[in-house]
Length: 256
Image 1 (cartoon, one colour):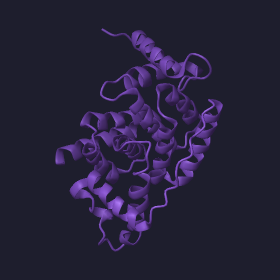
Image 2 (image 1 turned 60 degrees about the vertical axis):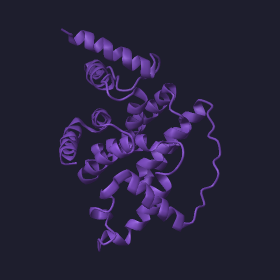
Image 3 (image 1 turned 45 degrees about the vertical axis):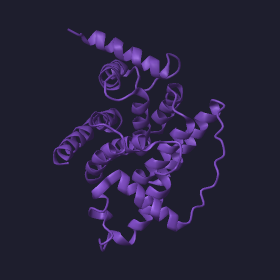
Image 4 (image 1 turned 90 degrees about the vertical axis):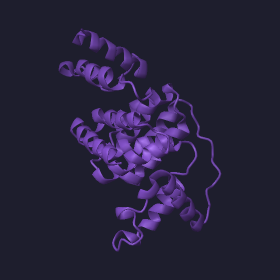
């Protein structure tokens, strides 16, 4: 039988693996045993779960911390993400994509933190060729990406071109959210979908959570990975929202 002391030691070891033993590791404030509690609950019982790799868990965590605008924790996790092997460009793409769901002001603030962390590591982002595709190309590419991601559900609800309220602005979403941001190099569609699911769970967005949980399966994620992306959001976005999200996704999997 595993004791709490054993669980705590497992969590402390995992936390040290992620953040090192120097400085201020994430979720390790010594006040009244908070760090011990986090070692047990977050690291031994969330981060150590099977079904999703550590780099993928970190990607989802960065997305949620950006969405929550928890900048001190984002800074600590960015450094750990680099140590885990996440490419700087991939990190940038996670933060840019999160702007679709939380607002691009959140992306800009998170990117400022990321660039500071990169600079402290001596990391310089390589210049990328400008993306100057015409709007017609963005529209076509966006529709193609929608089809690959959402399949027959791509025009449901607010995405319907016949919706008299959303129809006036949704073409902008098709062009820029799908045709531009989701198509940017540096992050594959599977990881983008898992990050979206984690964000929707933390942001309590029921409709898009159910939609993207199924869509993630269309771009290479497994049901287990979708579930684990939601579980990973719990320590950073709230366990109450995590549990609600798991119930929504469970129903979506049954219905889908």
